[in-house]
Amino acid sequence: FLDIRKLQPSTGLCTFDPGFTSTGSCDSSITYIDGLKGVLLYRGYDVEQLAECGDFNDSAHLLLHGELPTAEQKAAFDRDLTLHSLVHEQLIMFYRGFKHDAHPMAIMVGVAGALSAFYANAADVGNPQQRLHSCIRLIAKMPTLAALAYRTATGLPIIYPRNDLGYAARFLHMMFAFPTQPYNVDPVLSRALEKTLILHMDHEQNASTSTVRTAGSSHANPFACIASGIAALWGPAHGGANEAVLRMLEEIGSPERIPAAVARAKDKKDPFRLMGFGHRVYKSFDPRARVMRRVAHEVLAHLNITSDPLLEIAMELERVATHDPYFVQRGLYPNVDFYSGIVLRALGVPVSMFTVLFAVARTVGWVAQWNEMAAQQQIAPKISRPRQMYTGHMQREFAPPHADA
Ligand code: ACO
Image 1 (cartoon, helix red, strand yellow):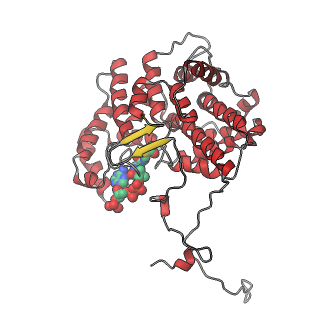
Image 2 (cartoon, helix red, strand yellow):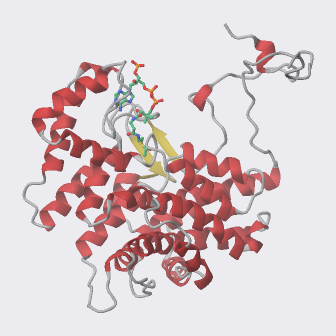
Image 3 (spheres, helix red, strand yellow):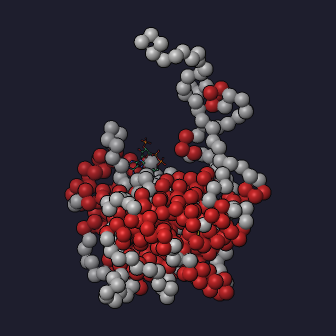
């Protein structure tokens, strides 16, 4: 039973809600989710429509500014996201300090945080213009930081961002081009990546976004706040799931071994879970997973991959699990990560970079949420400060340790 005095001894009523399953931490007009119906809206627009018909920059503008851009706003926004894609040459030296086999997410936490040393003015979070600068810089620079993590870790020469390419194509070029041979970005693949990025942009108060808001509530430098979001995203229960899904599908290895994997996932004594299944909010199909499944088929068809063993295992696993009473009763359906790994692998992105790409996309949501929070903080400052259920000793007398020795 809960001893309420240990929960909040002096300052009145409070709730005990581990994992914040039933706690609204803020008011926000950015993203709406109906987890029972499987609906996800960015500023009122259906995410499936935005991914199928919109482009990255328009969706980013929508999340950050609240509306899709006019032609004039679009031109300015496109220009900003292009011109700010370069990073300071001195930042590139940071990459040389990491161990050769460092996980790219570890590098991303470091270099995103290090940006705060290059943009000290960004700490002026009460200034809306300064805040907007930081948001644009972060969205624009993340693909460059990500590609640098890959190129430096693999010993490849660095490719600078090309101004004539769109957001997704620019990233693919920085990842895969070689200085000595021509490299043309495949428009079908870059469009597939663009859809993937749009689907991952925001998802209201998930673990990483809440982390960014919590860090930002102390008025910390926004680049450091985004680094804290990258750290929270890294875990396999959150953004690291797309990497974990692919490893799980490889481990299952063939459709015949699916029943054994499903049995393990249902066994409460076994910590194994079906990665890419289940979601804290969605208790029906994740709408993003529907688009990702279509994108996976489009990409494989375009690349003439007539049979991909991992896609076959994924589809059979989805069929088996979505007909199994264990998963149905608990509302466990494939989430966005279930198919995104198959798409990214087909694009040639190494598995260790999957979560990095998630971070690139989610940066849009992080900065939009951070900016919204910072504006609200100007009117009513409130640092994030949850309480706890204390389970330790109550006050006791101090005696010098080892007094009898
Ligand atoms: N496989 C098997 N059983 C599962 C799974 C799963 N993937 N997910 C949840 N369950 C079971 C739990 O064991 C629990 O069963 P019980 O009621 O009999 O005890 C029940 O479903 C509820 O699970 P919780 O952990 O309480 O659900 P919660 O909402 O806290 O967790 C989470 C959500 C973390 C996403 C979980 O479903 C999970 O671990 N999934 C796998 C990892 C994953 O795909 N993460 C990506 C999330 S999406 C994203 O970050 C973009």
